[in-house]
Each structure stands twice: as C-alpha cells, then as structure tokens.
Length: 231
Image (tube, rainbow, N blue to C red; front, side):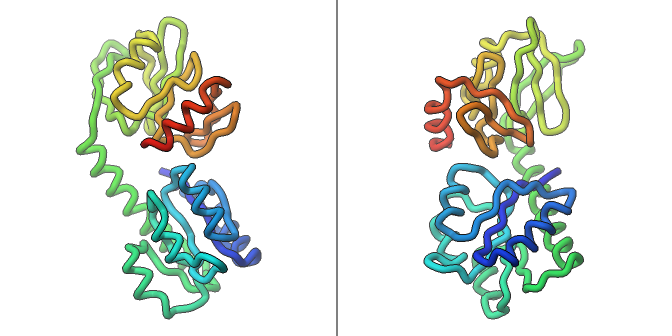
C-alpha cells in the first residue's frame, strides 16, 4: 500500500532532503513538493493525498494556519527545526513530529506510524462501505465500491480495476455506468469510467490514478473539474 504524499518546506535544502527520503521509501509516492503554504493550499484542494510532510515556520502563512484553511486534511507529519511547537502540533492530530536534521531511522519510524493509521482507517471504511456484486469467472463476487479505481471497456466485456486485483465482466460500459452512478464515478472517456476519489492529478489529456494515466476526452475536462469540486 503506497501513501500519496507532498512535502512542504520553504527551505530548498531542507525540502530536497525530505524529498530524497520520500523517494527512497518503497511505501511512499511523492505527488508534489511546495515551498510555501499558498501553493500548497491550492494543490491540496485540487488533488487528494494521504500524507503531508509539513514545515511549521514559513513566510506569510505558517504550517498551522495552512491546516486551519484546508478543506480535506491528510495525515500530518510535522518537520521542523524547533521543539517548542510539539504540544501544539498534536492538537492538530499529527501522526508524528520530526525534528531536523532527520535521520533515516527516525523518518522510517514516522512513516510506519502513518502506514499503520492509514491501514486501520482503510479497513474500517471498507467494513462500513457500499458494495456491489459482480460475476467474474462464473462466480459472484462482492466488491467494495471504495476499492474500485477505474472501469475499462474491453469489447463485449469490461475490466474492473481495484486496489487489489482486476476482474473481467460480461457487461457494457453503459450498463455498468448506471450501476455505479450513485457513487463518485464519472465517464471520462468512451472507454473509461474513473473513481473520482482516486484521482491524484489530471490535465487536458489524462487523468492519473494509482500512477496510471487514463485518457480524458477533451469535452469532459470542465465536467470533471466541477465533479471533483463537489465530492
């Protein structure tokens, strides 16, 4: 299980140091890095992430002030050169508090905490989440909606891609689109239906989910932006 994360630090040297640690960790997927809270706020309101490595002392808006205005707060690991913010940091439900300079061992410990929390949260949400039944390989299977990444057209069949595996189902895209329309799914292309909650980034041509680029129809971009704002 990879955690989608961002790094926020106004110091270029410190930010590069944390980015290096993130890129070298097998369970972390770096989505973006930011040098200030203003750009971070914009980025996080457009892209869903699981974890943020956040500096506290930054110009204009500090780390705490950034968290106060975020719509959807990911897990937080504070990264700072000072210890006096530790108590306040945990008022923000921080997963951990790293004091610069950061050792590899201490970094790994903080990440393990984040992974454990994310796993527990995911398992809890799956247990309570909506599900559908599909028929694959002559068997009926229960699939939790929040594990579905995307649906892909395959001639007379469709491929249902989840976080764990893929299923090939005898169905049309139109029929399956109706089955999941009550959830956060959208037809982004004639051959693809995407789970909006799993999108990490997009541009005028592609939507990224789980490090895969799915084609985005030119006339769907505006609709996609509106849909993402409403989930």
